[in-house]
Structures are given as C-alpha cells and as structure tokens.
Amino acid sequence: MSFIHPHLRLGVNIDHVATIRNARGGAHPDPVRAAILAVQAGADGITAHLREDRRHITDDDIIRLTGEIDRPLNLEMAATAEMQVIALRHEPHACCLVPERREERTTEGGLDLVGGFVHLQPYVARLRDAGIRVSLFIAPDVAQVETAARLGAPVVEFHTGPYCHAVGMARADELARLARATALAHQLGIECHAGHGLDYDTVVDVAALPELAELNIGHFLIGEAIFCGLEDSIQGMRAAMARGRAKAQ
Ligand code: PXP
Image 1: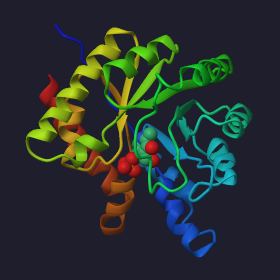
Image 2 (image 1 turned 120 degrees about the vertical axis):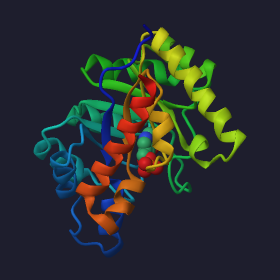
Image 3 (image 1 turned 90 degrees about the horizontal axis):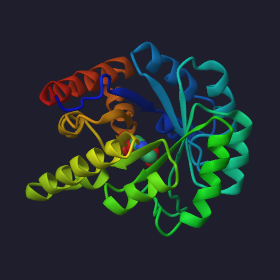
Image 4 (image 1 turned 90 degrees about the vertical axis):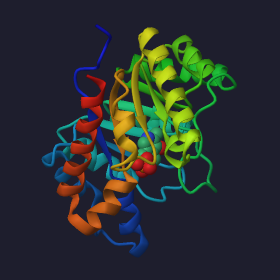
C-alpha cells in the first residue's frame, strides 16, 4: 500500500490578529489570546512570522507565545543574523526559513536554496544543533527539494500560493507539481508541510496529497473569523482538510 501520513496537522498562523492590533497601536486584539483560542479549537500548533520590520508580530509576542502556548510554536523568519539570535534565545519547536523583502505584502516566493546554499548550510546546521526543527519554505521544484536534502533540513514547506492563485488547467498543473515535489521529498526522508493562500476550497486537493504532514494557514482563517468566530473558522478548515484526506485513502 502506498504511504499516507497518518495525521495531517493544522498550524494556525496568527500574524493578522497582530496586523489588526497594530493598526491602532494598542494591545487589542491580542494574538496570544487568538493562539490560545486556536489551540482550544483544535490547532495542532501555532505559526507566527517575526518580520524584520515587525509589521505584525513583535518580539514581545514571541516571548509570550513561547511562555503561554502549550502546542508547538513554528517561528517563521528570514535567514538573517538577527533572527538566528532570537531563535536561539527562545528555542521554538520549529523555525521555518522564508525569503523576506520589505516591500512585499506577504511572503511572495519560496527560498532559493540552490543560490543560497553557502549561506544556508551553516545557518541550518546552527539551528539544528540547538535542537530546533528547521523547515525551508520552497517552491515545489525538484532542484529545491534535492538541495533541501543536501542542506540536511528535516522539513520543507511547499509554497501553495501559485496553486491557489491559478485557475483551470493551470491550477491542475500546479497541483501536479505539488504532488511530484511532495513524493520526492518524502522519498528523500524529508517531512512535507505546505501553506500560503489556502481557504476552504483550495485546501481540499492539497490535503489529499498523501505525504503531507502539516498545513500552515493564517489569512483566510483570521478573515473568516470576523464572520463566524475563530473556533468555527478553524473547525470549518479541519472539516475541509478531512474531506481532502478522505480522497487520499
Ligand atoms: N506558510 C508560510 C511560510 C508563510 O509565509 C505564510 C504567510 O505568512 C503562511 C504559511 C500562511 O499563509 P496564509 O496567511 O496565506 O494562510
């Protein structure tokens, strides 16, 4: 029988609770409160992106998240010296390395592991030596997956943005790319995660990819929570993921 990862985890990204808080410069709404609620609603972990410009999550949020959340924290960050110091200080369960440009609205592409190999090799090794699970956010490309293996990364997270934005045949092509890349990563002994742009519809076919172990989802869940509350939006996502997994059986 072919491989199916036994449990598809949901990591809830709470960045955009902080985006709303920061719009007024106060303390409300509190992303840590959202993280606690997300865990109560069934999130397997919490994801937060500490950006260089601190546009949403702040250093204090990371301190509070590591202290107050009893599920794994996945710290998304750029592979900079500043972020490495912060990661080594807080020792989150996982660090997901992402490319970052100040002018982008959100993480736009995957990391270029091939071009960045020389920089990333000691960077990944340092985090791994500290016991932090390193995940590399990449496009579903063969060269990137093979390079992730050479870097000794235990996890890759595949960028689902292009799949979510594509329509018609182009979407089917993007899904096929994701399927090939997850199969290859699994063969190379790398745990597969995915995320970016997923909603109740787009998540279904992604959740059907049998090698996937985790999805990280934020913007849609926080946006939908305005209408139905965070608990319902997370439970709705769980139900959509379960529909996808049923297709993988
Ligand atoms: N995974 C990574 C690496 C990301 O950068 C993001 C966006 O912060 C997400 C997942 C979640 O994407 P979205 O907010 O579109 O669900």
